[in-house]
Length: 117
Image (cartoon, rainbow, N blue to C red; front, side, top):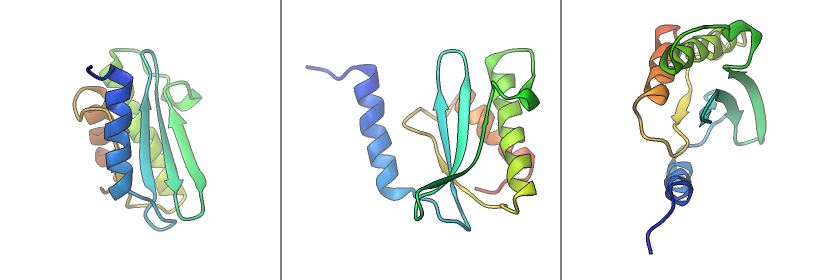
């Protein structure tokens, strides 16, 4: 019997989490994508703490347009928040999603705003 879409994503997510982890100096940039919104967090896995968060629902990400444009704006927003907190490098956790579309746009937006990964 084949896997459902969510079970497949869960397996990929576990496989990524075995390799990718965040520290206080280099946190993990975790991405969650729903049908309407996109959410990001900078996570310190050593201490189990979320350092920063940004989403398409935040006041600073008031962008009208396609979902890809909104994801790019969220990437820029999390990079700006990280720069204010003194974070320049992160490890990227795509959360089991394929690296295209909104996920790719978010990553490129964060890179354009100065975040390194």
